[in-house]
Amino acid sequence: MSDYIVEAIKNGVWETLKMTAYASLYAYIIGLPLGAILYATDRGRLLANRPINLLIGVIVDLMRSLPFLILLVLLIPFTRWVTGSSIGTTAAIVPLTVGAIPIVARMAEASLCEVQPGIIEAATSMGASPLHIILHFILPEAAPSLLQGAAINVATVLGYSAMAGVIGGGGLGAIALQYGYYRYQKDVLWTTVILLVVMVMAIQQTGGLLAKLRRKS
Amino acid sequence: MSDPAIVYELQNVSKIFRNEGRDFTALRDVSFSIREGEVFGIIGMSGAGKSTLVRTLNRLTEVTSGEVRYFGRNLAELSARELRKVRRSIAMIFQGFNLLQQRTVIKNVEQPLRIAGVPRRERKEIARKMLTVVGLSDKEKEYPARLSGGQRQRVAIARALAANPKVLLCDEATSALDPKITGEILELLAKINREQKLTIVIITHEMSVVERICDRVAIIDDGNLAEVGEVTEVFRAPKSRAAKKLVFPSNPYDPSDKDSRLIRIAFDGLSAKEPFIADLVATTGRKVNILSANTKSVGGVGYGQMVLELPKDEDDREVVISYFKSKGLSISEVDEA
Ligand SMILES: Nc1ncnc2c1ncn2[C@@H]1O[C@H](COP(=O)(O)OP(=O)(O)OP(=O)(O)O)[C@@H](O)[C@H]1O
Ligand SMILES: [Mg+2]
Image 1 (cartoon, rainbow over the protein chains, first blue to last red):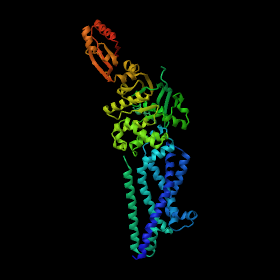
Image 2 (image 1 turned 180 degrees about the horizontal axis):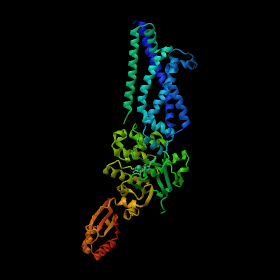
Image 3 (image 1 turned 120 degrees about the horizontal axis):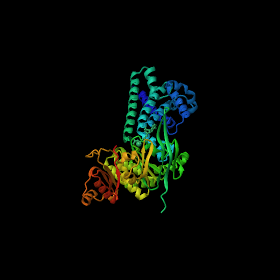
Image 4 (image 1 turned 135 degrees about the vertical axis):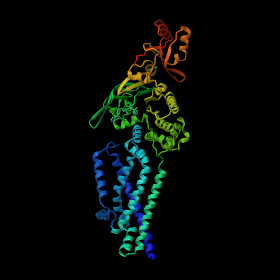
């Protein structure tokens, strides 16, 4: 491999990490509260509210059922509106975030559902408000499970980020496409694949370890 | 001195669970009151409705009809905000402890203080003090999963008492614990009751728990209030069938003669100190056959009951009975079950 390709791969790794980190962060900022709302408004829960639960549930599931590649294309105008461009690493963060939000929301909801009803009952009996119960009882209790889910979600975002390369998103995906597919440089293709695999595994392992350290029961 | 204030007043409380069109009446017309500063027991067989009843006391369960008045206020009429405020004065200890598993012991104890808006520093200070009270000051950094059942129960007690409640509700607070630890926990509750004038409501299916620390007791039988009264009174002369069943769990007396007369002597504190059976023989020369004796020591004085088979001779019987009566013992016939 020539020097400039090595340089390009290094840059690609950096771009991939950047896209993954930002998209995951934004996806959690929006997806975690959505997951909490889905959880809390469900039947028999703290703030049971059928219309809201149904509305958010339908939107989330609709978003999730769209194949990511299609979402990528559909979102081009929106991406341009947000970032002023539809190509490049920064632009890719938008569809990645949007694609990850429903996954984060549903995963978070599942984690929160694992919390023992007794904990909520105890909090209620202490006179805590629903918001206090969610913030100070349910979320801390669900933390290990949320972390475990985060590892899976971040790894998924990383995988998606490679796809963003198809529409000019930059990162390792773009390099694999450009050199590995169009120019048929197998060594570059395999290098990027191995790097992606290693990154996914590192994320998964780190997340799993953090969750394990956090889990006290 | 004036009578103690009434903390709870229940009037015709009924609870019907409606599930898939099938109704189940868990409580039927239950009325009684709980006085300030007393240890009030609620006892009954499994499934009698005890948990349902205690949960109406902080409105974790809504009553179907009737009223639960807490210091005169009907709980059902409170707004969500008022209810939260009221609940802060009613602590509850659950059978399963319900501690936060992912939080340290001290953080658990701090929870009610946090809800009450106590600043962090003060919170920590109070939580430490509470842990000292329950004898767990060395475990503040530990996680509940690494504690024994008795220790977890102590954490639950410390947490319940941290925000200085007026009432403590305990649903089977000791049934998961062995007798020794149960004794310690009850001792601790009794001490807190004495020292802080805290009103305690204890749910249990064990008569021994009631005997040990309760002032008054309500007996719940299949959703009905079978009996309510002073513990000593209920023990000496249980009126309802449910109470008799609880006080005298079994009736396997085996008299030497099928027709012989059996009496039950119930005694409390004072009389148990005297060796009255021996005295009986010494002073009257008559003998009785002890078929069953069930006595317990409460704070050094014993009380309980004894079933005796009286002598065959009519006159001898009279002598024995009048002797016991002269000693101030309360006697009742044993009706063959
Ligand atoms: N949510 C519910 N829906 C339907 N029935 C219920 C519900 N909760 C309790 N019950 C029924 O009400 C009755 C009383 O239950 P409760 O839990 O109050 O009994 P308990 O006296 O506390 O029993 P235990 O000593 O076993 O704890 C039981 O028959 C139970 O099946
Ligand atoms: Mg119960």
